[in-house]
Image 1 (cartoon, one colour):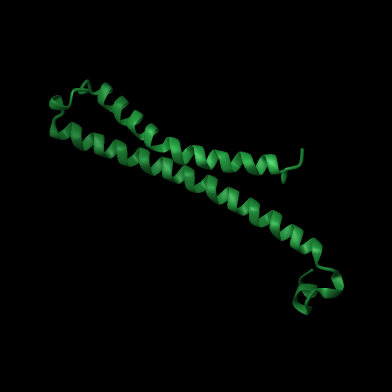
Image 2: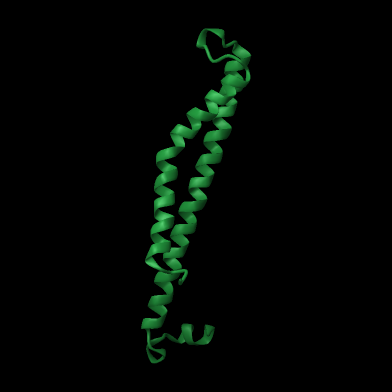
Length: 105
């Protein structure tokens, strides 16, 4: 199977959409795990230190998930640019290239 197949492109688009939809749920799951680890699942039992810790855990989780979403999106965009650029280069005849393009090849 070719790397530029529509199925591969669709996979990366679906992965990006899934990350976008699932990110808030994963962030809540990380918060619950952090609360369960400190045995403070009941909100009334949370101390100020635990609240700050929870905030920092949430911040790190959100940053990590956002960075992951950014990297997958940039990978997909670069794949689209690469496949569009290759097809555009193939469509241009050698006689139609500009002088600068001829020198660079």
